[in-house]
Length: 202
Image (cartoon, rainbow, N blue to C red; front, side, top):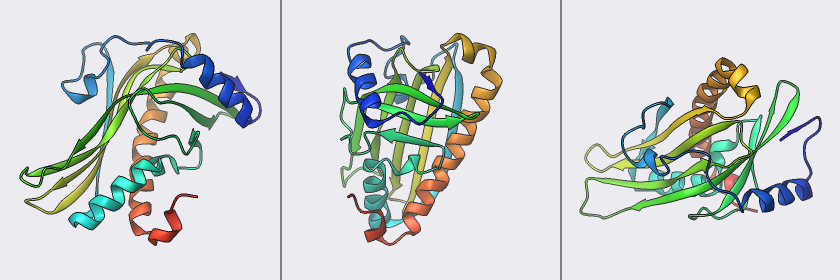
């Protein structure tokens, strides 16, 4: 949905109520957990956040707060939505002088922190619902490599245009996706640098 002004919380709530009843707009649901499906454009950004268990836990908390959307031109609503399979959220974006509402549903959650495993991983993926400019899936992941002690933020997506408007403007949509990946990574780096109290919920 497109608006001339930022949609109100009530508008977003009704939008999500309507979208929650609908199915995903793409068939390879959950494919971000494995090999990329054919026929979709891919986007991948990976950024080092620091080292150690403390950084891993801070990054996990930042992801739970949707801090990767602290980029100025996009946000998640409701911002306090717990990340769990089936949860539906709106991505509210301000681009080209307009406000865009895009609906997504969480497909799966990753929580792999076996102390015997070489890598700990936490994160989630969401997929597009009918009122979204694209069709596809995006995965947000925090990885801690215990052998190198490095912590990484990794965002990967596959997509194709869904609406007529985005089919016509697909090159712009692709640039916006790449920009989101880079700015999302920068937002996570900033979250690691801030005092913990500054990014606490509430």
